Structures are given as C-alpha cells and as structure tokens.
Length: 474
Image (cartoon, helix red, strand yellow):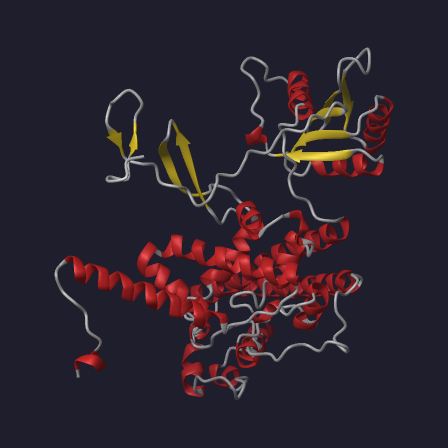
C-alpha cells in the first residue's frame, strides 16, 4: 500500500490502483442444503395422486392412488412402511389440504412447496415423472417448506377468510340495491351515507312494503342524520317500476341473510379465540390507556365483530397491537395469517422478507440486472400494505412518514416502505413483548433533521457558501 496515495501496488510494477473499500456488512452465507434420505415426492391432482419413494425402498417406487380418504390413509401407511419421514408436494389449489392432514396424522412431516421453485426438466411433464422429480429435489434438500401455522390458528384463518367472503357478498347486494334505486331515479342513497344503516333500512323496508309517499318515507329519518327532511323527501320521488321493486326486495333479503351468517361466523370465531391460552391476564396486567378511543368510536363499522377485539387481541399477543398506527382493525386477520409465534422467523428481516415487503435484486456477473420490490403474493403482506394505505390522513409520525415517502418515492413504493416499517414494529412487539412507544419517533426525527442540515452545509460549502442560522445572523 502506497503511503502517499493510499493505493495498493500491483505486483510486477504495473502501478497503483485504487484501494478497495471495506464493506461494513459481510454478505449472508447461503443456506447449506440438508439431505433428506427418507424423502418422498407427491404430485397431487383432483382425482388421483402419484407418490414416489427412493428406488431402494420398494419394488414399485412410484404408485398411483385415488384421492378418497381411505386411499389417502393407505398411501400414508405405505410411506410409513417404506421408512419415509417427510414428503414434499406442490401447493395445488386446495387439493393438497387433505393429503397434508393425513400425512400429519401418520407422523410424516409434510413439505408444501411453491411450484415456481421446482420446475420440471424438459421432456418429463407427466405426473409419473413429476413426483419422481419432486422426490429427487426434496432428497437433496433443495425444497423449502411453505409457512403453515398451527392447526388451531388454521381453523381461525379458515373462518376469517370465509367471513371476508360473506362481507364481500353482502357489499355486492348493497351495490345492487343502489342500482335498483338509481334505475327508479330514487336518489336517497346519495343523500345519506349508508343505506344499510338505521334510516336506510327503515326506508327500504317501507318501500318494499308498498309505501310510495315521499313525505311518509322522509319521516322515517333518524334525528342524527345530517340531511334535512325536505332534501330526503325530494330524493324519495321516483318512478316505481315493479321489476326494480322486486329486485330491491330480493337483494334486501339476501343482504339480511348474509348479515346473519356473518354474526354466526363472529360467534364461532369468538369461541375459537377464547380457547387459546392467554399470554397475559388483564386483571393482573391491565390494558394500557387507549390513545385511539375517540378515533375508535368515530370509525366503528357495521362489519366489525361484535366482541371486544382490543381486549381479546391483548390476551392473545400479550401486547396492545391496536395502538400501532394502521393495525386497529387488522389484528385478528394478522393473527389468522401468521399466528403469534414469531420464532418461525429468526429476525425481523426474515419476517419482512417472507411478507414480500423488502427490496430484491437480480445480480449476474457483478451487474445488477433488476432491482425492486419482490414479485410475490402474500396475504399477510397485503394486510400490512392495507394498514399503511390507511394512514394517508393520519396525524401520527407514521402518517408523516407515509406522506414524506410518497413525495419522494411515489404512492406504490411509499406504501410498501411504510408497510415494511409497520411489519417490523409488529414483529418486535410480539417477539419482545413491548408496547408501542410513539416517543421514539422524536429521536428519529432529530437524527433526520441533523442529516438534512449536514447535507445542506456540505452542498453550500461545495459552492463556496456558508450557511448561518437565523438566530446567529440576527
């Protein structure tokens, strides 16, 4: 190394070259493949499955079977007889779920893999060769298992997803009711905020029952409605067509039936959630003060569960996640998707990488070919993005961060960056059992202001200027 230039010498007298910069962070070592000698491969279909075991375990190492429950148990018993301890399969629709459950019942560890990660070799696209290819890759330890929470959490997840479908169907019926009213030129859905509220349902019931007098219908207005009675009366004048009245009647009946189904789902979900062992006793360790009490009352929606979500979530996780910006109504949905055991991910970085909320790149030959957000679909990652998207008008440091990133990166990248930050806060709170502390943002803001000042001072010095604070100049 040359003392004058700070450059290293090339042996052979070729002159100095710039010294390499020291990297602060060493690249992560790739995960070593763990061989699975007792591995099997399963190709799953709707009516039949193909199972492959190592060639030395049976005279017929590839077998074909039906998807009936009895046949699945026979297949699992055959695998146990061959000494199989783990079996890999593709995540094909929902066909893999019965096979997965049967394997677990027989003590075989299932490995659910993404089909994109195990493309077949050319010329071998039949099911017979597909299961052998899966078995070969799994025996070499080249297949990573997908995340699947505990059976109790999976039960909550199934009901939560079913409930979301019911809410979507109920909203579709509401839209069709609005369509029928518009076709009759009845405009009261534009006067009140929600036609499925107290006033809206009372007026709709009267219309279906045969009432056509706008003045009589307007008197059904709840006193809390902001629109005056005269405006509501004018909006209830229209062309009462019998075919549209019939559509309105049936859609209203379907909406009410779906609301009853949603209430039944809420009751079953409450039973499953209360069956979990609580991490904290609210009597011994009371809930922290609710800093969002006014916001919670103002934004209460008709689709929310009937039970106390905040208290039940506090028992499940041991911390009050509802105080985290954006996670007020998404805590139970996140629980159904990721559970409460964060030990599945060693660090928060692993967690956000699994969520698909971290940047990714493609490097070949030392050249960056592509850089950007990971192209993956993750339900939990979508929930964190939804939480970030809801903070556009939120007057919190997290909301300020979202708006600042929007101005810098654009809406899509800003939402992902904010979701990344919320996911790290979620992981830290659950894994370390600490409450959300908004005061930590003040220290971060001070550090950001210092970086801005240092950058401005540097830019001014490069142009021969010197920045002087206003207090000093005065």
